[in-house]
Image (cartoon, rainbow, N blue to C red; front, top):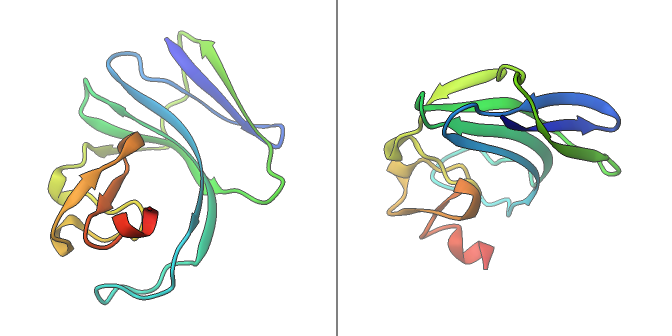
Length: 136
């Protein structure tokens, strides 16, 4: 199967792949938020740098997470596209998210707390009334 070998600062993180139908993603995220609290939720950190290696096993109906952790300024990431018979088992698996379970990828609001949620590029969710305008 085609897989991603991921390393950070010269240290292996994981080899991620899905043997059947599915998606594997490696994302380096930088998020900077406004600090206004929304819908009674506690404020989140104003800025985050993070690495996420995850995916979806469509055949099993599961979301997969191999790695989720912080990045630092100067972090060096290497992603190699490889062919492997075996890959690392995900660190966590979750049942496939239903529409009701979805959260906004920007402000973390639950679908039940917003008027409308849309799916953006990369499977990210955004609440229309709150975050879409901020992302423009």
